[in-house]
Image (tube, rainbow, N blue to C red):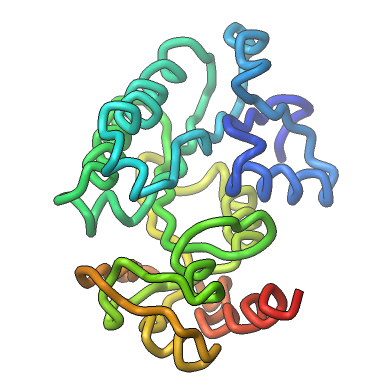
Length: 238
């Protein structure tokens, strides 16, 4: 049971953070949403759980601005660890910390994870590609707009609904002590198959990028990657 105001969500207005906040509101779980504007208020607050959703998720931006991505990913994580008090920290990371170590984005996610692993009590949740309320960028948006996708058509993605990710994180917030977990759908879709299914006119130009989870199953808790077509139909019909 999460005690009143003992849950802090860093980056509570971002894509993942806002979804976790919505889940907490729906289920009457008290939390403190921490943003750039108010973070100074909570440096001395004793959190039971601190969920770090504040790192950027823009891979192209990271490539273009590597020093800024380092600051926003690694330095920011270090800042939180040194300036906030908590019994357990939950780091929201990316499978890129495993599959994209040849990129700035993946390297910085991995460096941030290494900082977290020095703590006495932590869980690192690595997420694959997500969809849902608030999605404004990424390969799914490019495909719906028939924009160029700078990846190979054979890239495999485990697309997962963001609300299921948020639910799983809160339900398991006190589980998986000192472990790194890759969570999301167990199956995957090829980008070219999505293009054909939604009749996109996108062109593919780039390397293979397989955002597929590694050997982890949660009894189909997350559903299937094919559920993404329901979401795509909704946004295409707006």
